[in-house]
Length: 292
Image 1: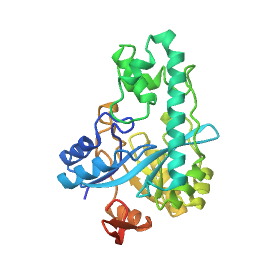
Image 2: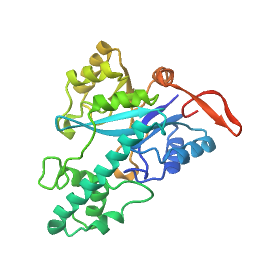
Image 3: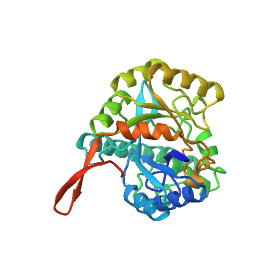
């Protein structure tokens, strides 16, 4: 069984609608994927319907934007209740902050590059909140940079003069919120030093005490040494490890299914998710599992 637990669609910063992401997974021979758009579950229904039609199991998830001491932390949440009030408020706040940050960055970039907010809006398809990837796409269309990678390495770099930090929850708070919503929290690419500063082992230990379940280890932005360190850390803390593509369609070079997760890990993840009573036309019909 081939499992990829980290993909994105046009519901956030991917370039394919959710159904097309599932179709790409089917074409790549994947059996299971998780749709983990940034701070939104708006693509779940479309992805789940496509999965039913194509024989690909879809695990609903989100990637929550967090900050600790100025360091960006991405927390994957799987199989949570999308209607949980506290988690819904957290995600809505992150989406609002993301767009406000994007507007300010575009205002700073306009005198230098000529791109406008309207140019960035033209790169958004569907209900996605505008973020840095959409600014990158506008820069590509304007001929300022060659691709998203160049945009993030230069004009949109967190170390550059045009960058604006996003207001986001602390990852420990986010872990607690995911657990309270019945979800299973996993840190995405926690040691990807090529992206910038990373959280340290003490941060992961604190998140584990709050309910963290796993670490995403096999990811193209991790070196072999970083992966080895994360495997030892996960073992010591009793966390499971995952492998994922972080697929964004044409938005990144990442290929869907380029890293995968062991089926036993998926079984563990499912067992950790809170049970959900599935509503029927005449009321609850019995227990189920979120995303089933």
